[in-house]
Length: 241
Image (cartoon, rainbow, N blue to C red; front, side):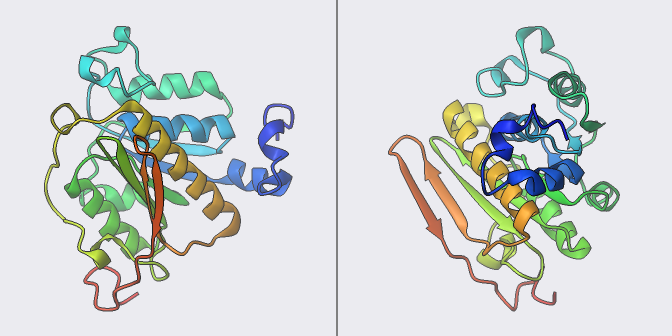
């Protein structure tokens, strides 16, 4: 442990040196390296996570730059995972960064997700989240759902067999969603939701507990609500776990 590097977070009683050791021994997958995913990956690396796997098949576009702080003008046209891996290693050379230039699908999800302790959703469409939801349940892998639109967003920790999953409350299981350039999103909402997601992840890694509530935040109003989402014992995805 680089005590000097992580001194400020180790001083927090909820983390302490014992929690920092858990962070440094953890392996995280971040699916999607857009605004939310790249912010999540950056925070994890700065906090000293031991291994991070980033998954995306997109290239950087000009419209990404206002909300995806990982990327710069010179990166336009390059692969997100390639640029992100370079930047993450510049931030913390001790973190192992595995970049996968693929779109997550049912064909590759088992291989990718079975290798990690926790899965972070940085996607922007129903199809990808359905893959994560179904495969994580099958593998019994915990994951954290995030979604951002306009000035608000959601975060939910999902522990297969213990908390409700996306299907428990009728979340759509297919569809591409609406592009940020059409539905609109403010960069501050992305940062806020990313911070909530990483905090939820650290809490889970250290304590291994979560009630699985849906956390709603609107940065414009501002407002923060916590909504209980009970498990559906008849859920087609997790009801038999």
